[in-house]
Image 1 (cartoon, rainbow, N blue to C red):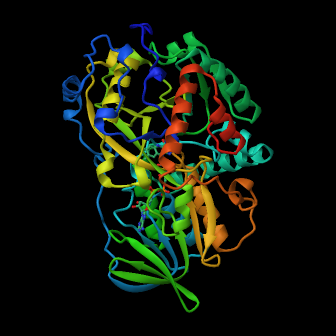
Image 2: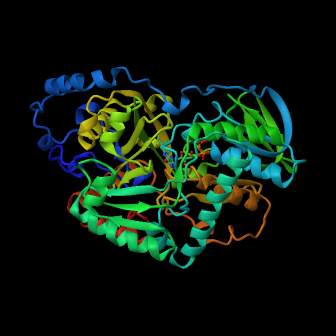
Image 3: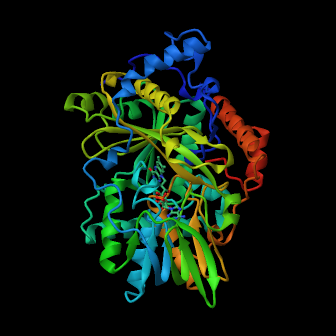
Length: 520
Ligand SMILES: Cc1cc2nc3c(=O)[nH]c(=O)nc-3n(C[C@H](O)[C@H](O)[C@H](O)COP(=O)(O)OP(=O)(O)OC[C@H]3O[C@@H](n4cnc5c(N)ncnc54)[C@H](O)[C@@H]3O)c2cc1C
């Protein structure tokens, strides 16, 4: 296995820049002519600039993506589309859950496990798993704080408690998956975070100490050790963590749906909740063709326009893009190594996440994340040529030995970002509506914890969860448009500079001080 196939450019020098780590890596969506998705200095075969040349270059990039199916690889051989009725007319329920991703499904499961006699209705505007839950990377993280370093910065005094609850949450998910025989390829293989620059090497050394200090089993890997594990000329060091794992996200959705329905939840697909009203002592959730009269409502609607309008101030929907390759042959796999089959991710502000699927494709996502003016969310935003092309190019640069492996799937999904990168919780309508939103790209596991918090709030229970500052505190709101757009742009430029230089500039330090966590 060789690591030095060729000398690679530093990917973090690319002009595409991010607003923050993972989901929050936000780039303003510019017209195509203004999208700088190539670094002019790193492509020896590049064409001179200019609109005609740009079109020519785009055309040259397209063929390798032309055959890629425009949908998540996870949807192959899975039931997709609606499988239950729309709600037509009026019904009653004890609890109405809005949204059927992980948050909504876990909420239904937990509510019915607590009290099997409860009447629980789940309203889903599209179909179960059509949102982020059915299209994510499937990294199962124990962290409830978007990483230990971020948790240490925001809630140092309760981080150990948050870590304990996060570990317990993942262990309980694994038990649930086993007990319900959910065939979701859950593998507790941990992940390796990879440094591509010298300053990231130094940051990873420090991070390894912090993780170990908080009880996580981690090892710092030098260049030779990383290379022996993952054969790529791009990586200078790594941090191997043995916490968490990987899952097939859509298979998890299907398993949770089956469990919720078995417990008695009534799911209505193609049924958008359009508003909440009060009548007498009860609430009414209006839908496009009917309504539900209920005592309690749980909002699990993620990055979509929230029914409690005030939540808009705290939520920034950003689009994240992903590619998947054809299954690798044994020889191709051997050329990379990767024998522990763990999740992989880069260490910078803009980072890729990548992993093998059950059938040994490589899923390769991240880096770009696109914010659309005015919090826009729409199905047509799930495909973006510029971001997919950029991902393809980075993949080829990272694994030159896989130059011939075709991409078979391309897709995108929307992530609900908050300024603190962790969800926000709260209530409205005199405590009868509760919300858990803002998982910021790390919700595969933490949505279960979020659903439990929202149920605690509806029941007005004082629990170890509801006492946490990470639950009771509120994130700093994003400014409204038209200020939101330039604020995002300024921040992303500062983060790009940090990726380039390794120095955290004044703006980011001020934001850190305000509790806006751009330091993970
Ligand atoms: C590309 C991508 C990669 C990711 N990778 C990872 C990863 O590797 N690891 C990780 O931990 N996290 C990852 N995430 C984040 C993770 O997927 C989410 O945090 C998680 O799925 C959120 O679950 P949810 O149920 O809150 O939201 P969703 O799954 O989005 O579900 C919300 C549902 O609410 C419905 N809805 C919204 N409004 C209404 C309404 N008014 N009426 C009825 N229904 C409504 C929507 O249609 C949707 O189905 C990723 C996300 C994306 C997009």
